[in-house]
Length: 620
Picture 1 (cartoon, rainbow, N blue to C red):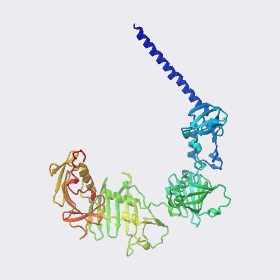
Picture 2 (cartoon, rainbow, N blue to C red):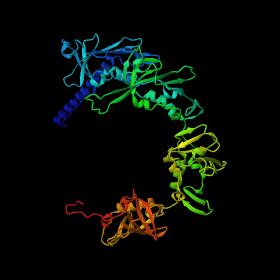
Picture 3 (cartoon, rainbow, N blue to C red):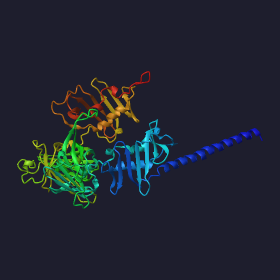
Picture 4 (cartoon, helix red, strand yellow):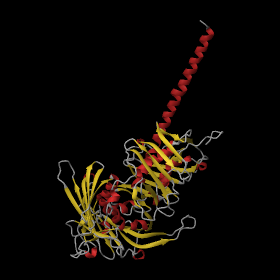
C-alpha cells in the first residue's frame, strides 16, 4: 500500500467529518436554538388567547379589547374595530419574531431603548402580558431595535412586522356606515323627509316584495343594495364623537331615514339618518381640482356624527319606483317556439324550425303574404330585446280610457302592437303563451306605454327600448351577401379596381396564392380578414333614388367561388362622403351596407393582398 496515498485519504476524512460537525451538528443546533429563542421571546402568542392589544406612542395611543360582539376600541374612542384590520393585527401578532439578537448592552440609549418611542402590550387570557418596547431604527433603516419589558436583551424587529400596529386609529376603526350585513336584513323602511315612505321585505334569499305604499314585486338587487351600500361604503370622516346638538348638521330633521330590520325583530337592528350637504374646496397640495361634496349622517342607534360621500347618497333609493321590479316580461329565450307580432299594418309570425333556424310569415293588412328565411342572430336579438325591456314608470290605476296612453288605435280599434310568445320548456310539456301590448310612441312624453295581457297596471318604456322591439320583417330576415358556414368554404376571390387592375387568388393549404397577376406572393392574413368579414356584410335595404354615388368611381368589385354555392358576385362597392353607409350594386339593384366595421375590410389596391418584399437589409 502507498503510505502517502493513505495519508491523503485520512486528511480528507478528517475534513469531511469536521465539516459535518460544523454544518450539520453545531450550526444546525445553533439554528434550532435561535428559533427556540424566537418562540420563547414572545411566548408563542396564540391569536385565540389574545384579548387585548395596547399601543403606546406619542401620537394616537390606542387600546382595543376582544368582546362578545368583536373587537372594540377602549381608547381614544369607544368604537368597533374593522373586521379586516383585526385579522391583520392578529396575524401580525402571531408572526412577530426577532430578526437579529444584539444581546445585553450597557448603554441602551444608543438604541433608543431608554425611552422607547412605541410600546405594544399583548394581553393574553390566563397568561401574563407580553410587552414589546420598540426603539430607534437600525442604520440600514429596515429594522427597529426592541426588547421585552424587564429583560436586558435587545433584538431587532423588521419594520413590516410592526407596521400593522402603527396605523392611525381612523384606518383601523370600523368605518361602515351601518354594521348590518346585507344577507341578514329582511326588511328595510325608507323615509324621505317630505313623506312618501316605502317598505320592502325579503320573501326568500333572492326575492323581495314591496309592501308599502303598494304591494308589488320589488327588485331584489336594489332592495338588498340599500343595506350593501350602507355596509360597504366607508365613512370619510368622524366629525363629532358625542354630539349634544344635531341641528348644526341637519340631523334634527333628517332628509332621509333608513331603518334596517333583521330576524323577527320588531325594532330595527340599525339604520342611518342623513343631514345637510357639505361642500369642501380641494386642499392646495392634494392635486384634486374639483370641490368634493359630503353629507352629514349618524347611525340610527346613535354614535358619532360622520361625513359620507355624496355618491353613497346617490346610490340610495329616493322613490318607490326605484325599488320596484322593472322587468316587463320574463321568459327563457331558449324555450321560445313561436313569436307573433301583430300591428295595424301587418302580422309577423316567427316560427322556430330547428336550432338557429327560423321561418318568418308576413301577412299584410291587404291580405298579401310573404315568406322569409329568418336570420337567427337577429331573431334571437329580438327575443332578448323584448325580454330585457325595462319599465321607466308605472301607472297603477290608468282608468278605462287608454287612448291617452297610446294604447288604442285610431278609431278605437285594438292595440297598436301586440307581442305573443309561445314557450315549451320540455319536450312533453304543454305550450305556454305570454302576451305583451305596446302603444304607439308618444313624442311629447318621450315614451310608449304598455301592459301585460290580463293586468290593469301600465308600464312605460323609453324610446331606445321601443326602437329595439319594433323591427321590420326585412331586418329580421336572412340578408347577408354570402351564406357559408366556415371561412375555408370560400376557395377563390377576385378583386377589380377602378384603374382596371385586378387580382385573383385561390386558397392554397392554410393560405392563399395569386393566380393573377402571376409571380406575386399573397399576404394571407389580409385576405382572411375579408373572407371572415363577408359573413357580416348585410343588405340594409335598397338605396333611395339619387342616394347612391356614381359607381364609375367605385372602391372595389368582388367576386369569387365557394364550395357549396359555386360562383358569387360580382359585388361593386362605392362610398359617398358624409353617409353612414357603403353602397353595393348587385345585378340591377343598389343596396345600403353599414360602413362602420365593413369599409376597412375592403381591399383598395393590389398592395393590400400582396406580401411586402424584404429590403436588402432584411427588413420589410
